[in-house]
Image (spheres, rainbow, N blue to C red):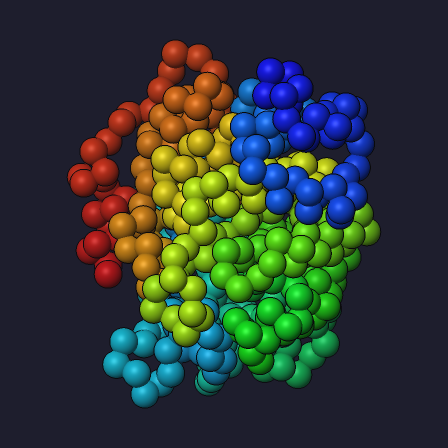
Length: 388
């Protein structure tokens, strides 16, 4: 780290980062504004190694979107459809269970389930889905629902948010997803997601879940119409809630995808922007153990580089991702476990298969290695294609 930092305008922060001291919002903004990506990466890598050493993780999971029908019309969203649209879909509980059964046979440990705010599905659909999935295999970890979905379910159930979450937990919910945070600045939020929950409402859902003993992840959608100061404000609010509850297991910065939506942004975030955002997230979120480089949004090659810029996790096998695909990331649907392991090893780190809560399942620290299937002939991909 010394080579880059001592020759950088950021050298004044070297000692503070090395000592593990908390950065201020002003310092975080200074880091985001810096053009010295090498020094920034060196600082972030120092902070990452303090947290996770020479390890980086991934999860063997499958995404399931139960429906894309939604009562909202967020300007940035290319996923949502109305009932009148010809390409909307909704799955029965039996269809969701079938997808889970296929994926379990191939070794997944987590189902990641989100959808739109469906105009007519009853609350019992959601609790019934969770119960049916747990009946299929009680060991399957269910990471489901965004904060706005939880608020929608509370409206359906006619219960306060905390009681709704308690009902979902009893039905089998293991973790909340972090989706829907977008950017917390209310003016920006109104421009990209008018009608969605406020920042305070998003945070309150996660606070209520943490108070029940639950864990969740959180996100930030960056690279659209927000300012760098807006990003720092967003991170500061997440850090404050983590100080309060310690309930976040990881943070996932999501690069904005510019296609098929109503926000006038010509190009997606650059690689430079993605790496500096991940690096500053690692440096500023000192009370978070894990920062994920979401390969679906970044592409695997850039996600791999991000492992040297503060990230310590590549997320998962995914299998069936609709939200980013419909926003333009059409070629990023599936990554075999062997590909994730290879990417981590090539970055000079030890691969670790993790569970939903980032706890290690297997450490690939020796000569042993899983089979390296051809992605074009992977059984998990074939199962996905067979079921649509």
